[in-house]
Image (cartoon, rainbow, N blue to C red; front, side):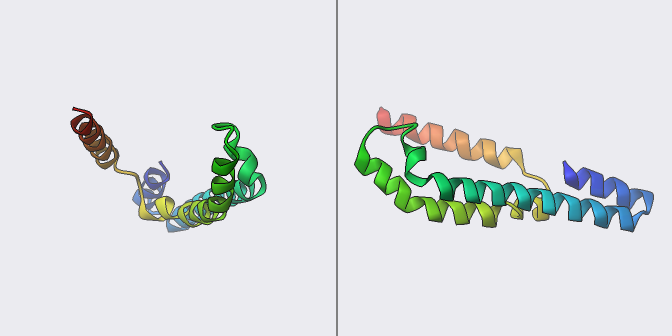
Length: 106
């Protein structure tokens, strides 16, 4: 969505407004990513108990939470900088994985 705003500002000939739109979108995305980074680091094992009651699974989730947190933080800015998300690619990945799962079940 933000790439549309940047393109509109560039189309109007306002490079300063386009630069401001980029800075705002990157900082907003980074703030959301940092919040989620802290959230997953803070809750670690407790978050696993939403989905399971097994202590071994919760312990494994707790061990993997730092990796998840860092991944979320690093990937929070990348989609903003790369432009827009190509939903056709996402749909093809989903449909291929569904077809593969159906093939394995049969």
